[in-house]
Length: 330
Image (cartoon, rainbow, N blue to C red; front, side, top):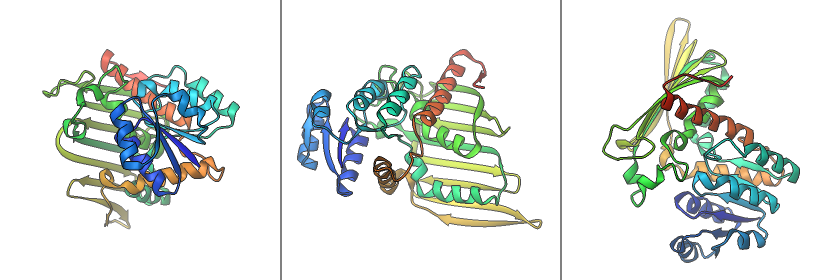
């Protein structure tokens, strides 16, 4: 298959390299000369400066790896050209236009997969297996926490990365946790959130967020994210009627701990797992899944409607913070 990667920043480069390692043909489109030069020199692939010219080369699939504010326009043009579609998270920076995108995808009979690499993370796959087994019972509460230092992640343009102009913002950027929350506890009925600007980073869209979700099932989710933590850390906790699962990781390592109440005794199981933040294999698994979807062998684990639902929660969280109220979704 021939894949066109639109946007050759950090995530575009990762996807391009992974596709090449899987034996696929790759070309790159980017408006930035330095990004095109990088792709030519490091990947030895053909590059384009204009989307129309790149689409005219008739790729089988397009990967949209540009800022969120550009996702919708590029995606519509790719589908109109008869290309399968992979859209980096979030699917867009707004809800308007997503119904049109879904209708076009159905009319063209094209596959659309929205980025959800954390679903392919080793730890999440193991946690999913434990939850599906029913060992801890149904989830009644879950907590997600993510922190990292944005200037280290985006040293060249960290303020621009979190700007309204490109559709950025800490909640939309950390949308993986909202996706996992829906996957494990089901539909969200209401959202309450606070976005903070407490650090010296001077980010237009905020440097931290506290989000509380009430699920249709009655379960609660709390989610913390920040851009000012000195070192990377990601911690998840899932509490059920009969036990709990926790996943803790930082730069030093990662571990899943499972506590199960059996016959009045608490059994503790510890499982060592790769650090998700440095685990390229989850991106490879995700791309293998996309290739199989394009070939009709699998169905996308996160299509337009699923990604739109998560985006709706993210936008409702931002609205809740701005207006100081609980936002009801259903």
